[in-house]
Image (tube, rainbow over all chains, first blue to last red; front, side, top):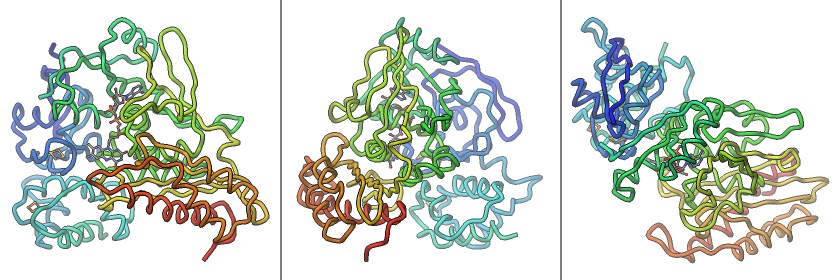
Length: 153
Length: 293
Ligand SMILES: Cc1cc2nc3c(=O)[nH]c(=O)nc-3n(C[C@H](O)[C@H](O)[C@H](O)COP(=O)(O)OP(=O)(O)OC[C@H]3O[C@@H](n4cnc5c(N)ncnc54)[C@H](O)[C@@H]3O)c2cc1C
Ligand code: FES
Ligand code: FES
């Protein structure tokens, strides 16, 4: 049983037929080539597969592709504009918040959503917003600093 | 890829109940954060899914004219955490919502799924027990409304009859108005962890005396439960450290804790005695009572 769905990825319209058991992660990585979306745990624990769905950070490994019908998806590939890193990406580079980089796409996307919300965050609130992302390398300090830098006016 | 054959996505509750009546094998899916994990592990090997995600009115959170609160089963934990009606009337449920998972999970996980999954650790359940919440269950033929306590039958087992969909969680004004509450989730990590124990305490106080105390516990038995003995003892007693100490002791009597890899029975009982008092202390303050040292 295939379902036809249409959505946008990084502003580009996509239409395709998917199996109802396919995840958005699989469709993005395997069928559309957005390999910046990482597969870590596949069960909603690590946040490596995070994408923005209508602006909301979502684990794409436990999100069925059929649910993406009509939605706007942003992956890490859509964050830099005209070859120029975004403010959030710059902050991650400057603060040395990246080691192996596997968790980075998800963290940059969550941080981007935080910046877009226009809200102010305390350090505790930043930690809470990042708590769905596991980083096995950095120890988080530089990531938190990068998020703080991203949120500066 | 999950092993899904048939997939239905009705837009109205009538269509959904009709489909369920016609195809009794359909598994309801809301946020999918329990269903898909079970399919991934093989606990559910194959499923035909009925998604209720497009039934938009199930997302509604409202306060009726008579003060009754109604929470649609499809409300996500993020929605509950940000909702002004929840914040103003039952902030203790906001605390419970924020203790759950991490942001990406809260963005999709629904309160209806949390209850219907039947876990004793469900972070919304102990608070809904304390609030005497009622559940509205709809079938093609009609609907019934039952207390949440009657819905839980055993570990992972709820009284969801074939063809039924949970549509609404209802809380009556007399069960929350003038109450203060507090939820404590005790877990090994501060986020992204399942509770070792969940304690939700609410109380109403007049002139330094407990008019009513209700304590809901998660992971203190095979299902969430209430502390009946402690609650009846508390009624009419002066708000004091001694009363609290006795409540803590009596709370343990209602538990059926067992040893698991997360914690031993003895440790859980210790947590019940201690944390029910701590939760109640904050609840007292939130109910407008004098704070205890
Ligand atoms: C990484 C991770 C962390 C988690 N952390 C927590 C946590 O801290 N605390 C916690 O309590 N839970 C946690 N969970 C479990 C899960 O997220 C919650 O139980 C969630 O509320 C389930 O809601 P859902 O909408 O995703 O349910 P689904 O998976 O869609 O459904 C769950 C069950 O309920 C049934 N169902 C759903 N909606 C209805 C309805 N309206 N009527 C009838 N039946 C229905 C389904 O058939 C299924 O049996 C976690 C899960 C993951 C993956
Ligand atoms: S791969 Fe999706 S959360 Fe880990
Ligand atoms: S940089 Fe390696 S996991 Fe975060």
